Image (cartoon, rainbow, N blue to C red):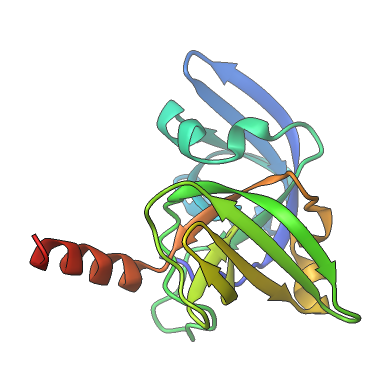
Length: 195
């Protein structure tokens, strides 16, 4: 379980394919605090630490993960948002994030709002967003400001822009999306009761 509050931006330093899996090696300051078998959210995708060496650690993505996320577009030098799992005695500063990416979205607009930025994303699945509701974009807990059937916008403050990989997102880039778990359960329940 995660909160969507990004702790650090890591850099991909090595990519190795092994059959249908890809091993990603990341350089991060938090590496010394990690342990083998620990869950870490990478752009919102929960991956398990399988190797640690110096300031680098390695995680493995299986084909199912590669099919449903933007990880298959990572290359050496890609900047990745990191968050370690939530401590149960800590504050929930963002919202409940599972680390299970629902779909990939595409950035279709970036608007400089004189001190903040408005990003608009489209997506292709049946999930819903609601204005002032929660959404996770590349692992970052954000508030929806505009909501349509297959599109939403979020506004980014300077701190988030500088301390996540939002500053590297361009129009046309794909991002990982995780929709609010409570909203998903409500939508499923409504669908079930209406049949």
